[in-house]
Image (cartoon, rainbow, N blue to C red; front, side, top):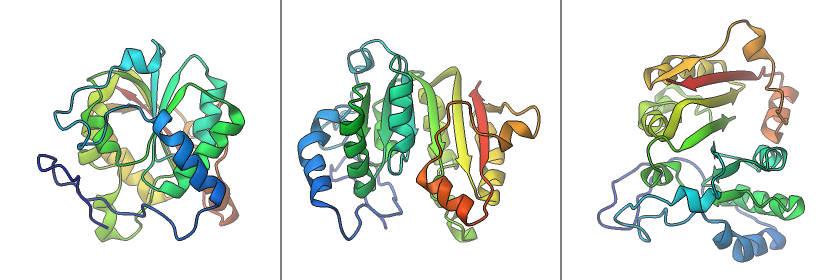
Length: 237
């Protein structure tokens, strides 16, 4: 799928993937209608903020460290982190509206208040994040795009990694989880090029999940299909 922003000054950006599934529960439609606007991080879309004024991070986070989850799927991990770390503020980005609706339901159940939701391309969010404002970032079970000709669509390309590196603070942690060996290969090649250091010192560092990890539905599917998860930790230089 290829899309662009509607505003005439917006850059053309290819986007590949689903925006919405065929069906959505009535309750999920209600979540989208009633909750999404209030959880928006602010003026992210080009039509609303064509001059790309930076978000007021202090006002958004109330002075808390800012974390970012890129592609939160059904939102299990995002809500878990928000509840586990009330002293942090998390923005989750996800273009697939069915996943956004699932997250909104989990937020209602958890009553977490230290998060925001951007239902769209994370590159639009990068545009309006100030340099070195993010303390931690997560990329968990991203779309693998397994065909070789589609590898350029993966998040772990410089088109995405360079703006991510810009918004991360020096020393910030970047976590990547994937069950696809070739995604691991590409990650270990491309992420250091963008200004990151891989933190592994022994095999257990990428074989074992982080101490605050919660297994997502994507990971459970991988385990059922006998694929091995990898947990990669990088530090922004």
